[in-house]
Every structure is written in C-alpha cells, then in structure tokens.
Image (cartoon, rainbow, N blue to C red; front, side, top):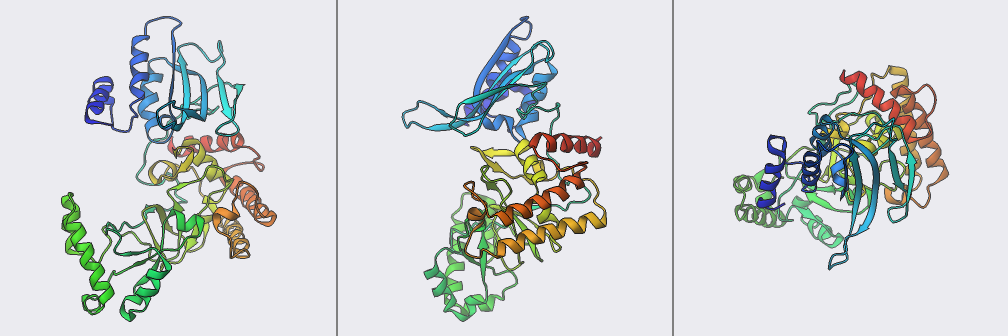
Length: 418
C-alpha cells in the first residue's frame, strides 16, 4: 500500500489498525458502521483471500463480530478475472455479512473443487472467520509453541550477499571446488525449490573460518570483497554495519544437528506436506523454517494429516499455496502430551516414510507427492502415520475427513489455551 492508503486505513480503523489488514478490509469496516443501525441490512465484498488467513483474521473479524455481524455466506478461494489491462487472474473470496441468526437464516458455504471450477453451495450450521464450518475462534500469533510436546521452529539463514556467497550452477561449483581452500567451505544450500523440486545450489559457509584462509584463497577473497562492497552500498544502515563481517551471512540460524526443513510456501494441491530431514551440513535458506529433529518426531508430526489440516484451516496463503508460519501455524498446533510408547510409534512411522522415499532416489518431493498420483507404498505409509497421529491428537478412531480432524484440533486448542 502507498503512504496515502496507510493513512486512509488508519482513518477507518483508528487504533485497531495494526498493519496486517489488507486495504479491502477498509470497505468491510466502513460498510459495517454505515449499516450498523439499519435493521435487516447486509453487505458483501469480493476480496483477496488473504483477509481470511493467518494473522489478519482476528484484526478484521473480532471488531465486526463484536458489533453483532456474522457471516451469512462465503465463497471460498476461486480464480477471478480482474478484467484489468493485463488480464490478471487473482485468487479471491466473497464474504457476505448480516446481523441475523444462524438458526433463522442458516449460512451457506460455496466451495470450489478446482480453482477455476464453478461453486458448490452447502448449508452449514455456522461459518467461522476462516471460512469453514466450525465454531468461532481466533488464532493469534505466539512466540512459543502452545504444545509442550513440540520444539520451536525458526527461519533459515539469510545471506544478504548480492549472490556472492552463493553458487547457483554446476560450472560455478566445479570452478570453486578447484580452489582447495574454498572447497573446504562449500556446503549444500537449501531453499524451497531445492527442497521440493530437487534443484541444487551451494554456498560458502565461512562461520569460524580463519581470515587467513579467506585471504589465501583467490575465490574466497574475491567473493568476500564483493559482499563487502554490496553491503556498504545498501540504503539500510543495518546492512552497512554488517559489511564489517562480509564472510558471514547477515542472519545465522543454522541448526547444529540433523533437522527438519519446512518450506515457507508449498503447494495446496498435495495431500501431505513436502518437508524433509537434513544433515547439519546442509545450510537452510530463509525460504525455509528449521528445527533440530534428531529422532524424527517433529518430521512425523509435520507429515501427518492433522498438521496439513491445521495448516489449511488457519495458515496464510500465497494465492492458494500454503504459507507456513512459526508464530501462527506452528506455535498454535494443539498437540497434547504424547506418552513414550505412542511417540516411538509415530517416530517409526515417520522413518518408514523416509525409507520409502529413499527407494525412489531419482524423484523429487514434487514428483513423489504429485497431485496426479503417488506410489502406493508411500500412500500406505502416510495412512499408517495418520492413524497414529490422529490418536495422539485425541481421536478415538482414525479420521477420514478434514472436518473430523478440525473438530478434534479445535477441541484440543481450547483445552491447551483455556
């Protein structure tokens, strides 16, 4: 948004404006105030789907609900031709609101099997602010996991190097490896594309590298000099200051042991998450999140149907792709305490998934989890994990639908946050 639009949002929302709200929400707030005392009034807007995802949800819907508005109907995400000069297609939702009762006028959810398909309406008991049939609740940002069974996850490391600490091609890699000093510091560099699509990149990881090594290496000295120059030319004072350590990434959060690597954005078309466990020598970029996972428990939980259902319901989106967040999605995942025996069973089920993946060494995660179809043995392994994870979250029997899992997840969330 422009500065003028930010000022307009502040004028509409007042002290409630927190910077997370999309410009379109100004119309929701204005309409709700304009129609507040008009009996039987209603309003509806086409909006970007981001207003019903992640952190913006409480900021928008808490004030509306507190003034007696409810969601009368909702179109979940679909592709819309914006009819602009560049014929852009955007992913949008439609939300209709009134001040009547769910019992008097049952709400309707319109879903789309494909992003470009037609809507299918379904009368439901209630529509919550995440545009699903479920009780009202708001997921706020948290700095720590609500579950004592889960560790923190953090963003990967950020180079801010102008590309000079990174190696993007096989030719560059071969040239760098010919320098015996530089070769000691070459590491795999893993972003979302490398993790999911199996692409290859490398970086120079010079943490604890003696400056004498850097000075004696023609490759390293030239690259570090370029990094220093780029950082000094930055408009950001904080980046300029980091020019004093040009051999290092500007943000270093690399795990010291084997870890699970979670892409920040991944496709909504796959049935399970595309994550993996990596050795400490593989450097994760800030396009991923990481957490030490020596025994594989964390990997197994993220690969479960319970996790992907939670991500789908309350996480943000980039168009329709899932956007993982540690503060909203992960830190609110309501996993109860898991006893040693079921925990070990979940770990073993996760390891079985890793073993089956390893049987297809020439396939990337994108290929293994293709929406077109998956290997039967991999599906079977995930279904076995799902049965164990469902039970760990409190299911009395295996779940078969998102609705069944959400009912359990919301119940656990209330218990853990009450």
